[in-house]
Length: 101
Image (cartoon, rainbow, N blue to C red; front, side):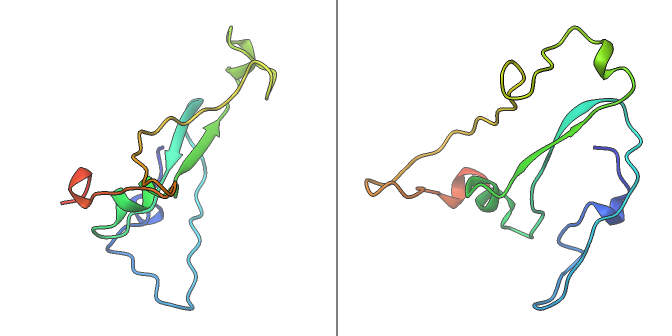
């Protein structure tokens, strides 16, 4: 996603307990499927593994003219596929060596 660096968040932009932060920017890019996720120092891999991520779908003036499925929920179904391991109780089995340094 094209956005100003100071609106992307990251470990250099701490949000202290009780404080809030809002990303605000104008979307200036062609249609695309983007994804968002946290940028917490040394925690990004674990947080994405624990489902703290999602899609941002950008449409533009050309979107309707494309030969793509257009009926949301019928033939246009956003899908995120992630590989995970589970403990026998069904909880996530995250190993820090998988994604974090």
